[in-house]
Length: 479
Ligand code: UD1
Ligand code: CA
Image 1 (cartoon, helix red, strand yellow):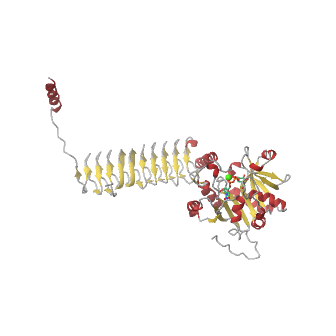
Image 2 (cartoon, protein in one colour):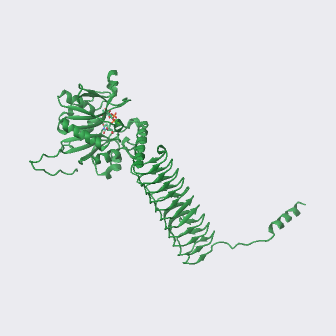
Image 3 (cartoon, helix red, strand yellow):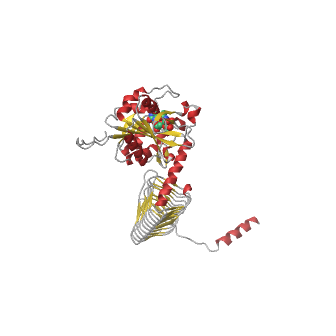
């Protein structure tokens, strides 16, 4: 339940109680998808999550209600952690019906701001402007409008004279050829006087192309009931774009990502060819870091200052310290890298990798649930899984931790200062003590004490003159 508002004394005017209702119950038929529209991702997170995050930025804070219906539990589960309230619209009979269903939930409020769960570029400032304009106009309904070069598909705003007044909103399907020429569209964002909305909402009808209750028809209903309907136009029309089709979604995605790059550039990050980079909304990058073309920084990734992230690297939900070099083609997921470390080219850090300060993970090295200590190096062609590796360790080329016995995973412990020769296989569970040496090509199945040399390979034997003797024997045969 929303927080109850504290009582104010009668001498000071009471602040209006404002609710934000986000309509997110629709199926999104035009996407031809088995997933609900509002859960499709753009800019690396569900469309609805963007709208909720924006609603939460509106000041003064409002109670937020998300109206869910199609795949309600899936939608609820995806965004529940944001702490919003939910209203279930079990049957989706239109945007007007969505608000009818929310009648009870919204009963304690003075003003209701309505947002579309499928239009994620709206900003908190614009919502605030809409809300303030509504209050200043003392309107029953205020809609946010925009001038679009290509208004096709949107409801058109039929103005009342030259002022701010609105007579009606007509949907694309019912608009006359003359009305279709109007470029001022309805954004699907509104502010309503709650009492007026629910006094009049039952006048909506389903007598339209879709047989739905259109919230947009409230403009005409209020107009006929001599209630004030006004529109405020956005200065930035791109903020109101909806995502009804996959093509529209990809356009919004591109916009969001370019906006993200612009924000990072502002903050002192160099990004070459920003339109080739995919950087999710929540990613953070420190100043003087350089991002080369075709880099993806996804999820909750944090990159420090003074790093260089080279081309074709894909970094997901990971934390990179200051001054790290990520060479081309590095893949990293749910991992951490300390300051000054060097990764790649073509390193693969799987979940739970923790690379220490100044450490190196080089070409074709795969790591998983692994801690590599300060200054340690694994430069070539290794698999290091379920391993705890100390500081100042050298892992020779081709070293493999054999962590899996076909049923269970086992741990390899390599203490500080150890030298593992190339092509060693370390059969876990196994421990290599501090400062020990493991000879190249050894198969290590038993613990190695600190300071020892472990050899686990067949002794080399040399047969002098063997090749010449073999050839002569063959020649003899042929005769
Ligand atoms: C709506 C407006 C249109 C406006 C456009 C702006 C109506 C009738 N039309 O059209 O004037 O130009 O937005 O983007 O409102 N939803 C529910 N319950 C329902 C139906 C829809 O919650 O029963 C939700 C959808 O999930 C969506 C939002 O309402 O998030 C808008 O619905 P949608 O079908 O996308 O409306 P548009 O056709 O885009
Ligand atoms: Ca829409």
